[in-house]
Amino acid sequence: MRIRFTSLFITLFSLSTYAQTTVNDSASIGANYSNQTFYSLTTGTVLSIDNSNWDLAFHADNKEASIFVNSKRDVKLYLASNDTNQWNSLDTTIKSVKQYHNSDSSWLFGAFNREVLAGSFEYGWGTYNSTTHEIYANKIYFINYGVNLWKKIIISKHDVNYTYYFRYANLDGTNEVSARIRKADYSKKNFIYYSLVTQTILDREPSYPSYDLIFHQYEEEIPSYYKVTGVQLNRNVKAKKVYPVNDVNTATASGILLSKNISTVGRDWKAYDVNLSKWSIEDSTVYFVQDISGTKLWRMVFTGFAGGSTGRMYFTKTAFASGINETAVTPLGLYPNPSKTSSQFNFYANKSQPLTLIVSDLNGRLVLTEPITAQQGFNECTINTCTLGNGTYLVQMQSNEGLTTQKLMVNR
Image (tube, rainbow, N blue to C red; front, side, top):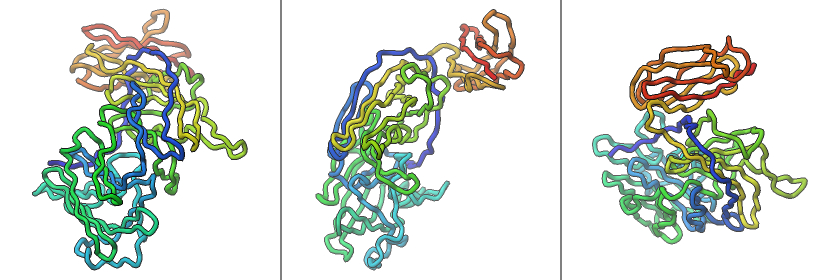
């Protein structure tokens, strides 16, 4: 078993797309933002479920070990001790020296994982043993999950069979509960949930391949931690906010970089106007979202927000077909475009091969030719536009199998 944390990354999205019909849609999280709504850009709402019936969420992927607390219902986690031998001798008079919060950018860092040394084998709550391939506890925590509801808790182990073991008790050690969660029972889920109140494991989310977005209330660091209402990405879904655009109905994803930051869509597409006592929607803003299948890019434009009365968020969505094709060269965009001094031409090659970069004006006059040696996979080359006059140019990549063409604007 190899458990790891992966960093966030960005990907340049393919421009081999074609527009589809724009659809008006919405998703509701209920009055007072009480629900968590899992949403598919293709099929709409997959599931809307009470978001206050759980306290802990354990990552279900075999390679990960993140554990979240339910910030919607104000579950709070504090460091009790870095010495696990103090389980029976904790000083419980001071319970809130150091609080941990869920990450608002990655599903790999829940509140239990926030104290991690870069490059180490630590996972916040525990340390990975390279001999046994298991993670063992290195901290004890205090957890508060309601008025005067305090427990001490330790995540004892994540074993070689992908099972979490943990225990919790009253601060004086009474009513101790030992529990375990087997990942194998939830292989199609992102998280496995647990209620400290009912002492039960909850299967409360749809399978992760079935949805793209999560509409809910969560905690964000802005700069202190604050509860917000918005949209987060499912794992492996990527997105990008583009602002400002001249026309939200015709904006394209040309040259944009997509991010796996789970709060890329987030909450700041709306704002509350205190003077008018109503919500306003940020104009000139679009979000491009690559769905869970990786086969479509969607343009989302938010159009309304009902606030706490229904928790309904209104938007339009437009699908584009996408993906790397099997031709020798697939163009992945020119950036920046328009260009002032230079632009980066990104493309995908289905094999290592010699290519020729050709730049010409709209009258067919050749202004640049350059041999390119492409490696299989993603490639990039720089086009110097310092000597080109303002106008539109054709950028072509010639291979033995054909010619691809992109338009490049030069505007200084």
